[in-house]
Image (tube, rainbow, N blue to C red):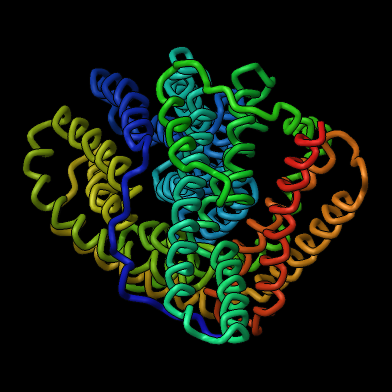
Length: 567
């Protein structure tokens, strides 16, 4: 099976994130004090090391504060570890080939760990940017501890910056995730009801047919309506949003009364997906609006639905390192592509081969199609970005303070824009990266622009060719595993439905397991569908599993309501 490499839509702008300003402001607040302190001390040459810690402020903004504290600590540890390896390598050898090789291996490890732990945007790219740049910074072993201490100190400040909003809105991430689930469920219900209305019009238009013809048409319409409800983009988006809300709530630490109230609202969103005809989307939207700010969480019925949550929390968590095996082809792609991009840059005589290495590292996504799209976005963003740099550099050269302020402005712009499309954020990332090189001393702008353009093209082309060369046959295996998980979860749920009185909470837990398995199946199918040289996917089996799974989810809701009526 061949992957399609699209051009249309690759540069289309999306809607900005609801919290786009949070990472944008956080990174400015995290970067500014260390950089301004170094400016006052006349040691801007050390800014690369404080930037390593400060850029940790870009991570984990969607996580509850308890989970955010842990995630940021791990990100800082990973950042300092990668920086330490790079600085030690730089102090031990001056061989550019060796340094590029070390950078490529570091990029592969960082990519695999970030994907396995699902740390989220910006993923491994920031880690690779810092460690790759550090490889080519003049260094001695005696300087390494001091430079790592600067990174740790700035990282501690970034941790405090990211945790500070919790003092004002302690359940903000959970409330946002729940609101997203409710809004996505409302959008699905509206689309489902609109489709049902069109089907009714279609039936009315064919009312003059014979009874047999009408019956056959009604059967086809019902089947089409079922397929629509199961497989539309709105349905997939809503199920993904609900699972993301559950993940957020269950990772948030102790289950306070506020979290229990939010859990009941997510249950309402789940039920809406299973029984859209009986759901009022306006009510879901009203609940979502009420979650803004710190007001009281709306009360939702069916407290007993939360019994399944207790069962989920009692189960052992799946260790993240189990995901490393399936990620091996992506890690190999990253290592090979980064190494070849760096070597090619060296062969062309470019003085900063780590730019080509980082460009290649930034390409690798879940499959070839997404990698191609990211490559197009990266090239376009960097080309426009160097033009922005050419326009801004006279201002930055007015003095060290102007240089620092320009970098801060581009930090904010990058995070404010990148959620709309990667290329748009790259327009700010590119001049920022070029200006950072001037912290250690003046750089000739023409040479910087030329080298950046060459390294961008080298990294994008060589990196993509490496992705084509390393096939990911495990993508199909993931679909098979996900299919088995869906079928097994559906069978367990069906057995519970057949029991006269299932154990308290067991059916609700089974429903959530089945819903999560369906989301994972869809993600696996989409990843494998965009992969290169992939065996044909079992599409009929996938459609059958998805339809039966969603029908079983609906049956659990009907069962619960029947029990409530009997009670």
